[in-house]
Image (cartoon, one colour):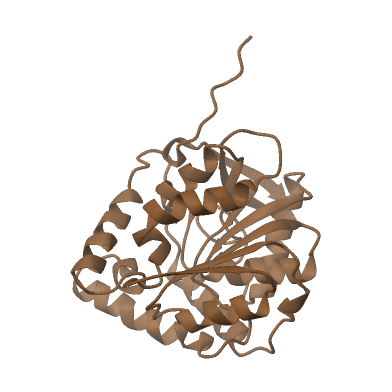
Length: 283
């Protein structure tokens, strides 16, 4: 009897579900089993189909990768939480339901806020931490994400584009080309795609981010996990200065700022970033 071949392509990762806390969580997993899994924490309005396969696949070559839908998003049931802290509680519920007591966390944008709240409450759960395009609780201008998001959704609607082209990338020739390439990569999975987020769920998530931005800061000086922080140098959504703020607050963290790029700097520079993050998580 031969073992099933290991799937290392996110486009082919099987869709799975697990029940916990009275809800069904939708998730996908790929990469070799065994060892500590890398759990991906997704951004605002995102579903399982919003991860850049170039980054997921690079990590899944050598690691067990798990992506999941938050409650009330995509194929997960239940209601979208109206605080980031509740989203972190749900993430903990999901991870422990799968039977994991140690993970590495890869997070982007709102996912990075959730990952921070998760670690503050369960410091023993996370071994290594990746925070991209994100900022700390109570960070300067964090609550302005809401206005920027609605404005860019409107701009995208008027030009019949994907809002991520405006929100994640600069509107110059390089940024526009990187945006189109990114959106195209998100379409590589052709079967068993996830359901889009509803407008009501998006609004609830935006309120949660606004509350997080207006809250008292968490004490991140207690974080002992090796931490990699990355962003573009012109992030309009979660200002780049907040990545620098995280770097100051988390002792011994590494910071990468990519030039001429926005919120989606890690996607624009995926060829440079993917091997760096894979090596960081392999240590």
